[in-house]
Length: 143
Image (cartoon, rainbow, N blue to C red; front, side, top):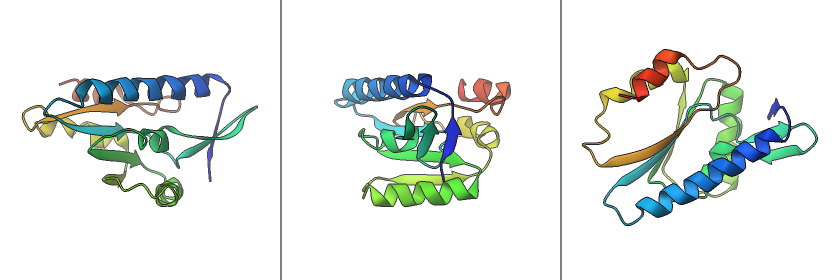
């Protein structure tokens, strides 16, 4: 099962994400940090884009970059099952944790762990549909 979204801007957004992840991981590879990637709206791993058909989504694209830990947040059980299947099909030997739940609740607790003091640096990709992301979640991860 895939989510169905709009047009060509989705492809551009995914390309920009990949360029950023490439730059980010290369810039920090010689630093003494552990890197994590958090996708707050992970989905199934694939998206259906009008005019283009099925394309690989952000969660699976991120696996192409050398993060130490990947956190995927998704509330839809069907999408979670498909994401797990897609990750297994890629034979990605990565440390992936898929968390079932509303990203707003989870992101509001993210600041309770001292990521900086514990040597972590990371990217949080927020790509909600409509108004799924609460302002309080942005404030929370900004602390």
